[in-house]
Image 1 (cartoon, rainbow, N blue to C red):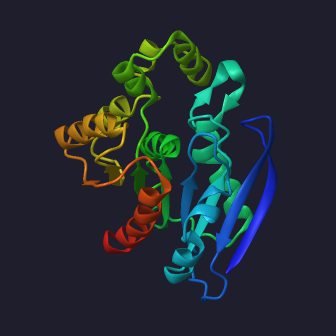
Image 2: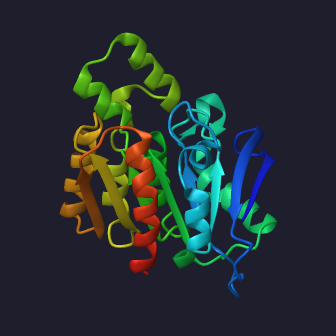
Amino acid sequence: MSTIRVNILSNELDRAVNISVILPIENEMPKDGYKTLYLLNGYTGDDLDWIHETRVKRIALEHNLAVIMPAGENSFYIDNPRARRNYAKFIGVELVEVMRKMFPLSTKREDTFIAGLSMGGYGALINGLKYHQTFSKIGTFSLALLNEIYYSHRTDENERQFICQTFGVDVEEIINTDMDPRYLIRKFKGSLPKIYMACGSDDYALGGNEKIHKVLEEYNVIHDYIIEPGDHDWDFWSSHIEKFITWLEVNK
């Protein structure tokens, strides 16, 4: 198993970004290159979180899967032109292109997946939907819809300002834009990836997950929705990264 940490200069972010890469080099490389999972960290995390907190290296080896983990930098993985930070385009276009040039990865849609936890779950869903021609499957674990959490808990003005700075718009302006997964589901219905959604029954983000599940049902998007005992923590995420990677093989 090879674990590589690279630092690339991103044109979309106008700065250097850390990327951790897992390559199962002990296994025979497939003729078309490795199937690839782009795996996103949560808020306050970085590109090493999944390696430190889970068995993802061992799981990747068992399934002959390459895993690409970019540092999320509290961005929620969306484009914010006001901050000169096009994180969605970085994840959905630039990162994929650069990684395929650097490593022996498959260029096929059916071999390319995206997943993440909490903030990373939001980023995986948004960019998996937005760039559905690149990604064939999406995984979210404790998907965090920041605007829904705001409305549910009626947080203070400082929290509202944080949302405005992160998204580049006011809370209400997220709706019906490409930062709103419900808008993307409606817009691209009929051509969307298969989706794996998991959330703990004690997770504060459960309400937002329920809302997305209902929209996916309404538009007949193929998805598995799993609610199990658990909270917004690494015990839950560690369990479901393994279940998700197994699910990728079953749902070819």
